[in-house]
Length: 253
Image 1 (cartoon, helix red, strand yellow):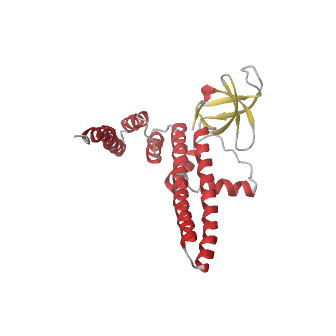
Image 2 (cartoon, one colour; image 1 turned 45 degrees about the horizontal axis):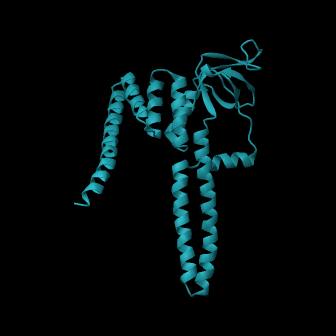
Image 3 (cartoon, rainbow, N blue to C red; image 1 turned 90 degrees about the horizontal axis):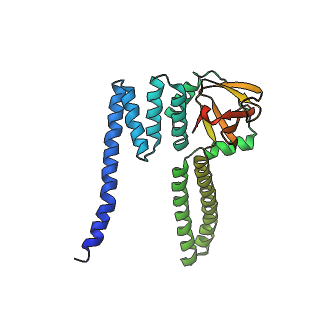
């Protein structure tokens, strides 16, 4: 009888999670069925409800982007493709559809060429997402611990030498992947990028409606958020241009 209470607590903890997972899977399939029937509004509504439940995945955002794309709501499609890309940066389907959607916006902004070290860093950082870097880090750290144990229990000099050098290698891998995982998590949580949703935006020289318009951007354009003042945000374009826009003009990625 003493073991019944802990068992009940375990069931109370896990059963809702299992039911939630099954329910989410059913809803996700229902959204896919609606999409196949070209009922994009229903598909969007179901996927939004899954997001409202606190669920998140690259597939969810990708399918939501596809549904908005079919409705010709390009800014919303781009927003969701960008969210999917954060979770799965090297997914070919996500990257292809995002690139396709970007061909349909008005602004064609040429990015500033990156210094090769920065470009290499960004490419390597985005090679895996946060979860994948974490898995690699745990695996490499586990191998490192095995080598440490072998190093201390073996009596063979050659084995000690080999495990020492291999341990150094996996120590470096563990530190590197741990740092990459931390940076990926930081990028995901900082929300320093956004998609313009207002059809035409007059970008101001200062956070004031009466300030001079220094350039114009259009819906669907991706911007970096670099500063804020009340209801204004200072943005930076891929070409380095800076200016101020209202918080009503964009949605964060």
